[in-house]
Length: 389
Image 1 (tube, rainbow, N blue to C red):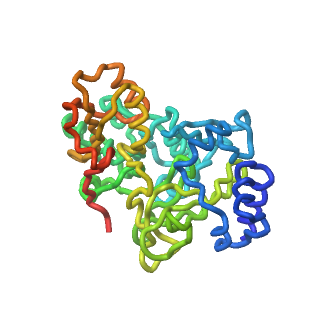
Image 2: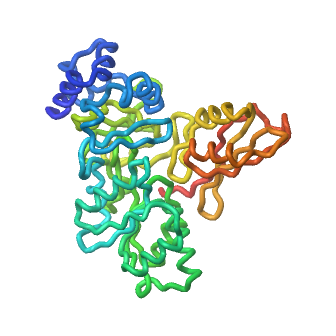
């Protein structure tokens, strides 16, 4: 794989952080010629990025371009700074958009956030590359979103399944009819688990449903193409499933999604996303089952990763020592409840600070001292997913 060796060589010469990883492992670029040779490079864990970036701001000495040479810089929870080297389809989601049938005849409502996190720009750029007209709707504003859908005869939706569910509920309340008042015929979901119930509901409205998988750091990694089971691995990155402890590539069972990008500006090589998946039987190396869990303590809530350490740090700063955060699902919506041991109700200022840090709106409840069972995990995911087989 000539391209792989070229990227490794370039990263070694231009990214001090990657060069240090190689040197620590006692290897040089010449040792990496094939995909199997990547096992010689220790996996860079996503959970380590905040520490690396803090030590060598802003990109942990892993980028080959300075900040002023980047088109944009985003911030994901952690915090993790994600660079966009240049305008255009940097995250390579146009491949998934084409598979989902989006084209120059579509007007697409992009309901991902354009604020700090890169998701809005990810799909904006991908949709523009396939020729679609994009409405940068962002999150929230249910009434305005429905009005835009109706007035502009929107044909496509990009966002989370739970938010489209909210919009469908609103449309039903208003008595709007699909095929006359609303013209949406296709939807692409990511950032949340898509349930069979939600898929069926969309299909009842005549909406063709596709889903995909990607990360803020790596962009598009896999997507539904309906030409085979589950999700097709992207052709634009090298995706491996590896043992989370040893880093060895596996062909059977659950493994961590480990990615190598062929991007010389930000050459993430052997990057451990922290997501767990497995190969579809008979399609090893080609198709994955989707995200089956997390290696670390991170839990995805409403499309954002919430981490136990993140919650603990902000609560400690606010003076709360004991808490438990519980993730559940009600009426197809994620719910995050944080129970805090305190004799006083939480202030609005403290609530706002918690929300700003975790970037998900929680329900915060105070409970009496010593009422929480601290032998349990501080971040508990009680959702039971109706997974697609």
